[in-house]
Length: 581
Image 1 (tube, helix red, strand yellow):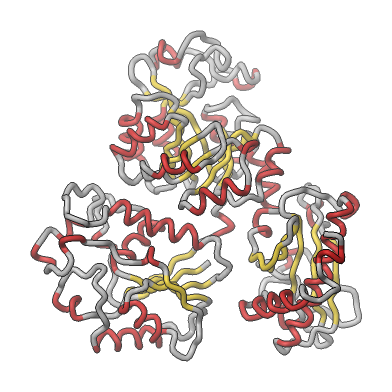
Image 2 (tube, rainbow, N blue to C red; image 1 turned 120 degrees about the vertical axis):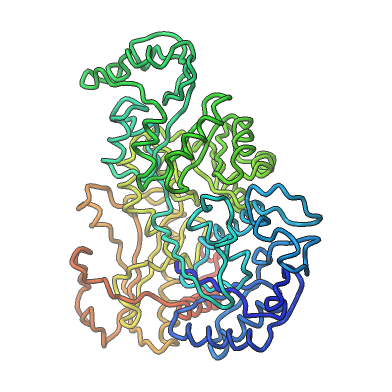
């Protein structure tokens, strides 16, 4: 997804250098000229949707940019400028304007919005964008919101002040959401299925297996050192006895933390957190750093601030008090709360009170509805407790940010086959199946196009595993979508003569995986340049580059297909009751 962000055109208050928050001021003549210039600058940019602050100066800017283009515009109050409270209308020089934008600002202004909460508001808006089907979005907003959006992609500046992240009137900044890479595979205590947990060899194994995240646990030694270890007692995972807190770091270094797992890991040492931070925090990974005890919050943050080079770091814990303590010290670091029970309104409200980022329930307890509650409150979801492949296959299609697994390679294989295509643009769904537009179609839209149908949650290797009711559901859906696709594309001046239906999955065998039941719908035209009319379809391996420049269905195609689905659903042939559904 590509995001273009622009600030409204100039107003008279901009010229006077007045604080301009929620006061609804129109553009001046120069501001109108700036908007028209931006319209010209963006004329060759593909824009599927404009999302705009509801104030006049943004609406004017958006309307000018959209003139003669008829791009859908929606308004979102989360794009409103920060509320300056009693400072509204003041000259910049009449108060500490630069200091106002510090995230550690101690100033108390009457009715003014907290900068950290303002940033969180913008981040919540951006998180919701990931669920939209449009691929190219223009955001028209205020300078403060432009600053907050910048922090989402680039993090907070080292001086903790976002004042310099602003942009000029009608300047355009581009960002990219790489949705396929959003999903984080956290190697649980390193690749702990293959090496002794929380050791250097386990972390190296995780990287070797291509995990894009590492989860680890922190404890405190008798002499105050922060070390990486999960259990309170060392008896099971070393050749020593007693609690971690009863031993000095030097005493722990003399023990063997690998031989319990396998003789080949004899003499593996406990890892000092500062050593880990120095060696790993500069890598392109996401880290979930779990606090196992209270009292290590300050030291942990000091080490992180010494070595971190990016913001892909979550402080996580079952101990709510530990997370609250972290938030008091660092107003911006990401917090993940591990919970033993299901997601609820109560624990969401509790996490939001400390500006938490992510809630982490046990995978076996989670439901689609729970995750929707979290997402609707601006929280991401990471799952834990995935200790077998059966649970992994059950939950991987849910709208989650990632999961913690002992065997990252197995999840990577599953994701390589399923997660990326499943996150394609879903255009229709029934109780148990979805219809999606693939990112890389097997047939370009001009030659008939390509849709596919797959199961929402249950895994089936082929149609023979379908229960009778599901078989009926998928047959109705296949017929409905095929007819809608054919009618829609004819209305779009692409003369689809026939729809081919194919149950594929053979490519999975090339990757050493089992195929999953799904049905492809391929439009066929007589003048196709890629598939010869009257002959069987041919599908070379993706590595050949055959599909690289194939154009998928565009937004207008999709809307027409959806319109035809709505019409056909009223036809007696497709009424659910006639199918005993």
